[in-house]
Image 1: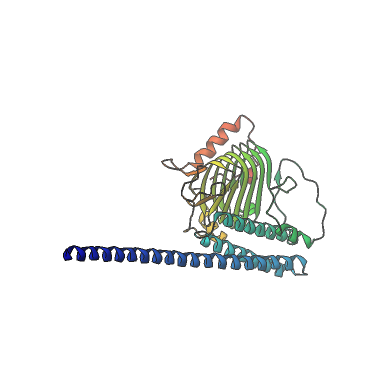
Image 2: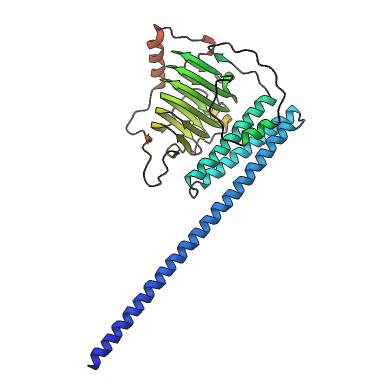
Length: 355
């Protein structure tokens, strides 16, 4: 009888000890989770504060440039500094995406795009360069407009709008044409392309940025871009692009061979296939060096789809190219010219550089 009583006591003590251990383990886990959440929240808060302050600093520099009486040599230095600051902020955002929510990444990326757009437009207005125009229609002479200090405030207060029609496009309104711009037309320039159908475009050089709006059944091959590539409203196109930032909007059935040092972004897109950058021409290595693009860093497999926010399920809107041979651009070029020869393929000999 006494032995049974001792056994019951031992069992009760064992259950109590086990319950106490389980409770302590639960409290330890909860404490660790709270600690991790605190660290993460502190990291997010610190990012928000830092990003906001750097954004304000860049905005103020843009306003100072816009409103000041600055000599051309000082303007060039100021714009170079602003560009470096925007690039540094882009790298900071990219490095922080691992702990930021997707909606915040999208918001910050839009802010960066706006800063880049305002900087480029302000530089183009205050430091105009004679740009090569390659358009199907003659554009009317533009009137000189005095700089307006409110422009920067207006643009920085909203997300950049889609590329409009009142724009001095570098290449526009072309059909069934092979267009090649060499380094003299491309290096350091902001190249803009609009309204192309069934064209082969080659940009052999290192552009500052490239923007494309409305293209169908086209192939675009481009050397290393120092800053950003932005495209919208593309359909059934092939791109070979190397750049720091890549954004693709409102496009479908696109094959992209890309080298991108930041995280690529797509939005309102579907049926996007992605492979590694493979365009080649004689001055490619020199253009990589001149553009400042890091050839050793390629994040082409890391794509953010702003229409697909599930972290656990891959986006159905894009995929990596698998078991698909790299295109032969020389053969594609020959076939394009041959197939269009009888249908009136236009070529401007001074701009064509077959490799």
